[in-house]
Image 1: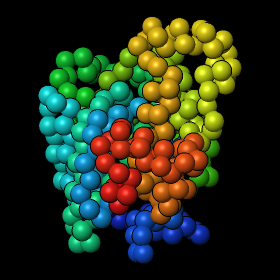
Image 2: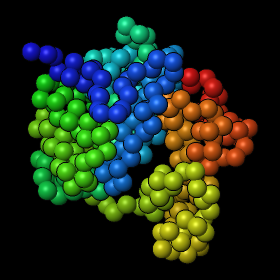
Image 3: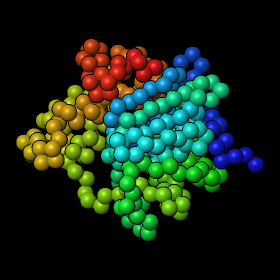
Amino acid sequence: MSSPHAVLDAPLRFPGMTDPLDTTGGHPASGMPVSRRNLCGLARPCLRRPQKTQRFRFFEATLLFVVSGRITLDDGAVRLTADAPSGLILIDQHACADMLKEPGGDDQRFRSIFLTFSAGLLAEFHRQHAPTHTTGNRSTPFQQVPLDADLASTLQHCVQSIEAGQISDQRLRHRLMDLLAALSERSHLFAYDKLQSSTSERLRSLVSEAPERHWTAHEASRELAMSEATLRRRLAGEQVRFEELLVDVRMHHAMMLMQTTPWSIPHIAQACGYKSRTRFTERFKQRFGCLPSSVR
């Protein structure tokens, strides 16, 4: 019988799709992050050299599985290190931590599965299942989870469903719910806030759907069905500036594209709403403390 780690370590292949973990000649062309609106997101970072990211913000609840290499998370209070093939980590929404990724394995690469769960999906899970296990006393926004054969199989089923792109939202929702249930049965849950989403979270979600768009406060307020004055007033009440939030979302999107696609830096800059590579590079260095070129 194969180990639970081998289930997820094996490349996933579909008709007409290249191996998503094949890095021959560069980053995989199929590595573009996948987003299923109001449900989840999936990416497969792949790095050739160590990379430290300062103050990386997890906008949504995230499951990380380290396929090869090592990852270290440090939020200033707690430091967690996970090595492949046992590196399964749950990270709560809004967590912010320094993150170090180190290559390893036979091919000396850092590879991982980066799966996010929407706030709406988590709310639905809590309404339907009312878990008795709570997270209120946790001292850290991330937790390491032992990986057994059943959990590995459930996770693989979700990853395959997302990457196949042919599964309806309804069927994918059931499979994601099953994964959350499997984690809950093992007393592992993401922290959950019953309060309605804030204006800044709604704005962040909106911008994340199209970071390349020429966003202005006026355009965003119209999409959120409010006036620009109301948007800015509500953001001010949450101690958030529109311009800073916009840059933060775009830079995190850029970081993910740097790790998952073979795109050139000018191409990534455009995908994040920047026509000037110089301006993009400045923003990236200000946010993460390193040049985009150093990521690869």
